Structure formats: structure tokens, C-alpha cells
Length: 162
Image 1 (cartoon, helix red, strand yellow):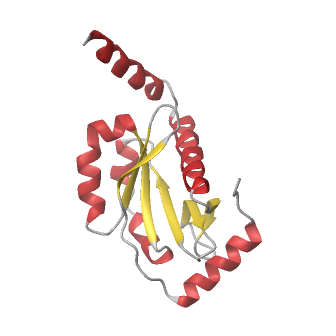
Image 2 (cartoon, rainbow, N blue to C red):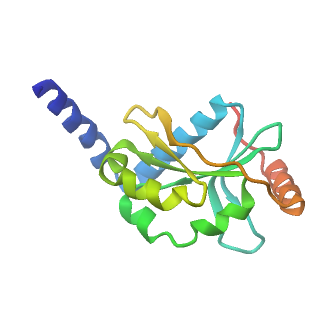
């Protein structure tokens, strides 16, 4: 029992010792590795609209033209105060949030409760950077003109696929 308690304290210490920008970078990298392993090309901070401030944290695209947005959330305040993530939904077929395991332990049920009704999914990252889907996103269709615009943006930007 003491070993399990010490292990839990150690896991908590790993994420608590990270600054918010470091945790965001860690989660972004974990998201890219997760989707690359599933044969997606990843684009970080891809602008979704022209001359706007709507940027996907991680935009993923595969050869079947499946488009996924993964929104990185480093803490509860980051998730709770974000009022514009709903605007990302027309720009993807599936949307996920990615959080660390400590945030999932403390607020996972609240987060799933807020995103599930809109068809979004949740990915949790452990201290080693391994990502696990805790709640699947529902697939939906996109307008053809949005698909075409995003394909052109992704092609011009290039993406990480290895």
C-alpha cells in the first residue's frame, strides 16, 4: 500500500513540477505521437479561418481525408475559461481534448460531462507521454468547401508524419 501511495505522489510531482508552457508542449508532443502512430499527418497551431484567431492546437489529417482537431488543455483553468472551443467543431470530423492524468483524476468526470454532449472525445497522457483515449469522439460530416480550404492550408504548411 505504501508503494502505491508513493507511486501516486511521484506521478503527481512529475506534472506539478512542469510550468504551464512546458506541460502544454509535453501534451502537444504526446498528441502528435499518438496521431502519427495512427497514420495521421499532424499540423500544430493551424489557422482555421483567414485573418482570425481560431487556431487548432493539433490538426490531424489522414489519407482518407479524415480531419481531427486535438485541443490541448494544461490545467482545469485552461479548460474552464476556454469559451471558443465550440467554434472548432465545424472544422473537423472529430474533436478531442488532451489532458494529463492528474487533471483527469481531479476533473475528468466534469470534463467528459461538458464535452460528451457535443460529440467530443478525451485523451489522457501519463507521465511517460503515452496517450490513451478515455472517451471517443463521434464522427460527423463537414461542408465540402471547408474540407477543400483546410486541405489546401495543410498542404501548404506541410505536416509532421514521422
